[in-house]
Image (cartoon, rainbow, N blue to C red):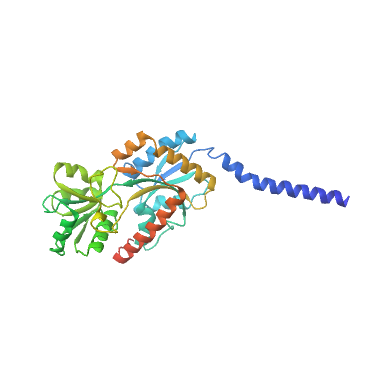
Length: 327
């Protein structure tokens, strides 16, 4: 009798272990079996929102489940990002974040509800913004080298515009100052549109901003395009040099990426990464994103994680050195 009970206990123990081992795999194999929420931490209508809705449209088809976009704006992207950081890491709540929400905010805000690196699972890099360096038509410089010489001869007299303190416009110009040793005056605006308009009107002389905002004014002759800020020439503007071709080591890459909460199942992350990269390879998606002024990026979760950590270190250090803080 004792041997029989011993045998039964062993069988039950084995069945329990088998079930425990099998449950996660079964659960992951069924994913997704319900809608997936894609959160955008900015208001509807912006470039992040447009990109998210393009991604949502295609993911809904490839995953066989609705992928509704939910806008949760506020606090420079922190409100929506925090909602994802605190969500259950089951693959049903995702985020389209940016370089600013995950690398710059951590250093700028005195208190943060999340860690931009530790509290998220990087899934796939989505796009790289074509970030341009432009000057007003009155500036007698047509190259980066000529502008540096012009600015050095006028310390503190050149005014550069930005969408606000701590914006990527601000960081781009501040890094340029730091890298070249020139001194300029920062003029922050409440948004990118007035910063572009005032530079085009020659009320400020320099602006770093997305090509979608600056190129129409370049075409009209009100702005002059000197360079792009990425480490390599943009596929969208192959004839335009990079700042780094004149200022070695200069780079400010403004990217968008797909994230989930930390601790997501590896199988779900791999599936999402595979589906997203397949979407980004579609000619119609490449064209739509190019029309938005962004360049498609292909990545693995591992390579995106490396980019995230690198930029968090780089831009966090820059923000702290410049003493930029937000409440």
